[in-house]
Image (cartoon, rainbow, N blue to C red; front, side, top):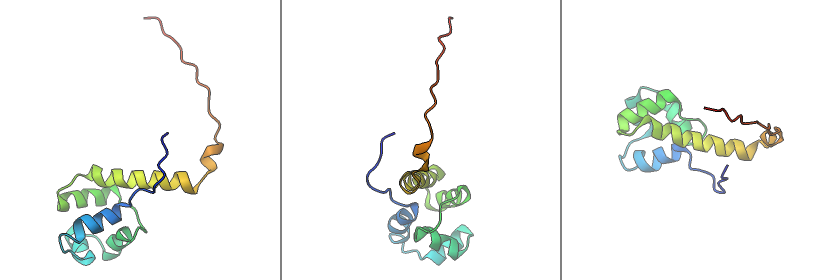
Length: 104
């Protein structure tokens, strides 16, 4: 596993600087467009919440992107946070697997 040194950008930051600001949209306006609460969008933009699959679908529709964009950004961010905040995973022993050569 290649370890990133720099923390990946949270999808809420991408949403804020690449979509809300250039489109001159407020958090409330985007929330209304997406059919979600202002609190939901505010929490994401302020890096206190994650983009869910449902929200990724809504964002992709409204912003003409793909749901995979939002989910991949979130996944990369979550994995980095897990790697750096919780070191317990490093205590898991490595299993030695034998690969059987099957004669064809």
